[in-house]
Amino acid sequence: MTRIAIFISGRGSNMRSLVSAARAPGFPGQVVLVLSNDPAAAGLDFARKAGIEALCVDHRPFGKDRQAHEQAIDEALHARGIELICLAGYMRLLTPCLVDRWQGKMLNIHPSLLPAFPGLHTHRRALETGVKLHGCTVHLVTQIMDEGPILAQAAVPVLPDDTEDALADRVLAQEHVLYPMALRNWLEQDRKAAPADAVLLNPVPSA
Ligand code: GRF
Image: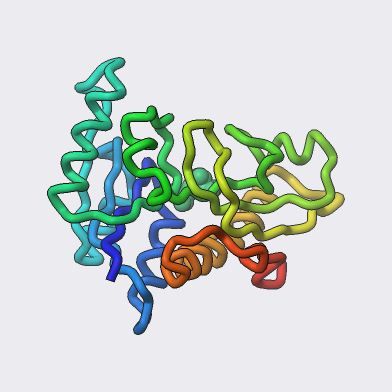
């Protein structure tokens, strides 16, 4: 049973969907740690109440020394026997210190159909660009932000009267389905390269 840590920085809705999926009988992994860089992250409280260790490794005491912060995180992960990291709204850029050590063992969810719209404000940029399809991507984390092999994607249509919030809500609903599916597939494949059929289109119907 793979020991999983989920990294968050805020509300943690994707973390909740992963925790809930991992509790289903037969799920090939166990969420044993929720880690945040921000003590105010609402998701920490949820994890505690769910009986999962909730750990804050606050980045602020480390100042600009990102590597020292990541070193502290890495030590905490090893002390707990963590085998896989799921980034889920973790809002710190990672350095090679963590990325290289966890190569092939760190997944992320990004709210766009990568390689389109890496970075922030993806829904606003999708609306401004006029794309007709938008969505979310689960990928392996590599040194370049929001790059790395794509494991799964879910698409939603961009509607004529969409607002940034409405589009974000529609994508988020897909994220909550996609990330647990992608995680399960990844664990069941024994971390081999993603097969072509790992790409999903609209795993749940849009409202
Ligand atoms: C999600 O949109 C995720 O794709 C992105 O950050 C957001 C986190 O939301 N990486 P939540 O904290 O999981 O609710």
